[in-house]
Structure formats: C-alpha cells, structure tokens
Length: 127
Image 1 (cartoon, helix red, strand yellow):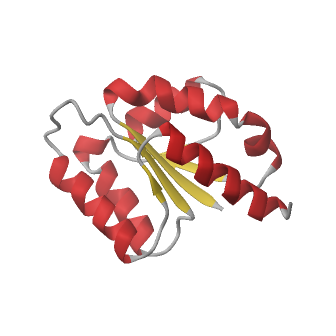
Image 2 (cartoon, rainbow, N blue to C red):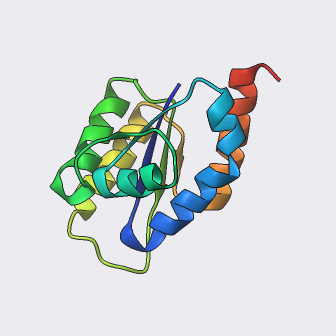
C-alpha cells in the first residue's frame, strides 16, 4: 500500500507529528511512503523510510498527481496551509482534482488523515 505525503511549510511539523502517532502501524504494515522533496526530508529525519520526489513547487505535486492518475496510491495526505499563499496553487488544485476523478482518499488536515489512516490500516491488517 503506497501513501503520498505532502505538507506546506507551515504544516511540515504537523505531518511529522501525525506520522509519529502511527509509528507502530507503519513499522508493522507493508506501507510505502512517498513524499514531495522537502516534506520527505522532514519525514526521513524523523526516522521513517520515504521515497522523496521533487519539491512541490518544482513539480512534486504533479508527480504525486501522476501516481494518483495511474492508481498507484491508496491515499494522499496533504496538510495544506489555507492561510498562506502558494505560487504552485494550480498544481495543488490539479492534484485534488485528480484524487477526486480517480476516487483516491485525500486528507487535507490531521483530523481527516487520522480517521482515514486508522481505517486503511485496519482494513489492511484485517482487523
């Protein structure tokens, strides 16, 4: 099961904190993490194995959208900062549209990610 992880700059610490809360599930399940470059670096420093793509503004969001379009992702977690402007907002909107088109669960905040991740890991582990 492959899960994509993206976080705007103001939300990267939230992403790491979220993943630490699921460390046991991540260590015991066959879950592959893929992330945009800078987010992936934060995740890696926290001790997680992650495939790093390009940074979001340099095309990482589009790379993750491509994985979603090819149905290679089980879920996308994208902790967005709704109070800041982002020059790559068209890429963000495209990624969200691709998730909707291909029916890929997309969590944009920790509360939604928590619920979705609990269910996915429960289903995956057969509990």
